[in-house]
Length: 299
Length: 271
Image 1 (cartoon, helix red, strand yellow):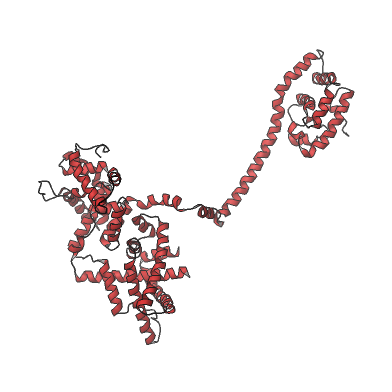
Image 2 (image 1 turned 60 degrees about the horizontal axis):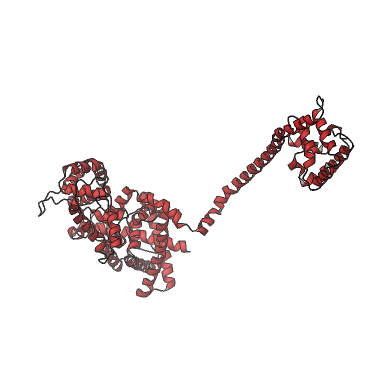
């Protein structure tokens, strides 16, 4: 490990070993306590030796290493702060506070500062880790300032499911003059909404993440695929498969739990979709993000 | 029908996303316990290793589970992925790895590709044929030109064998060469002609080249084939279409050779 580093900053095996062991525990032994020596060795071989030595040297109080760290990564930190902040002044404050967070304002039991440097494992690049630290700090600051509370999305789905049972939000026959038909259509829409929310919750984590990235976060397929580590074309194929599976699950849910028939589900799908298509048109005129997604679907 | 089904589910998912967003806003304004949720978030190191695709598979699956349900961590990972330029790195391997042989063949034979490929192939074929024809024409000229230095010593030798001071050296050498071998070489020439080897007539042709300078283009020589067949190069003489006519003409030439010195210009034009 030290041999791979171009500048070991005077570190010895005793100082670097606990850090490497901590990384192995975190990424390998936690999920597979019986991991083979080859797997562990491969993991260690892929650690960023230079970056890890620099960070450990900073943690050890090496002033030259600190100077090196600030010189090499101050531009990265400023760039990340600008991306995370809504204004230039906030970005500058955030960038300044990062170095204090890295160094640590409190002192640990061993007398060394309890900064965030202790959490860098060397698995990813140091620049990426610094960006992540800046982004997390920005979210924390934003929460404290605006008292905006992050909610669990599972709870949101539960709320939607509950909402679907109580009220009627999707209306398949909104333009129908017959009140009885209107009520039944609204009820059908609500049941479909509930079934879809349930189906999304039951999907695999990988598929659910793709749905969240594409539909809920408004990312393009290329961006969503990059998060998952797959190409845009692969993400598109997965989304097509997810559509088919979701439809099957929703139909099964409606037939088995709500007592619908097959023709009723097919009719409800088309009518609710028609209604939603009509509802979405005014939004498309005002929301560029939605328009972008529609174009991707059409393309 | 399948596409219509997909569009229906697509629309339903969009509506569900809108519904969830409004529900989250509503619950956010009502308040909640943010610290409990924050304690379960991925740390910066985990987020970065996920975004750069460096997390081991079991750990990655665990992080995926969390990211699917945590918008805050997801937003950080999305930002890190874009900053790392992961999308650009994914493109090239995916294109080469994903396509099988039949898929690539199908793409190659698609109408869009063939629309450009067929005209390009026709153009390439025309250029190729023209190039080959040009090379063939140049080749015939080179045959004539390249043979001269070889023929020169032969002519010089014939010249030394013949009487010095002769005014028509080539003709004399022809006369000398052919006359000296009239009885012995004629059967050999006949057999060579029958086998389309054309060894003996080449000496006459070579001497004609010695006199004809510079060599004329092929089409001009072809027009005078019947009048003077021995002026043609070997590869033209081997041509199946004209070999019969030339063979007839060569036989006539040889008959005249038996009777006396041969001069191409004296071959009757009506033969």
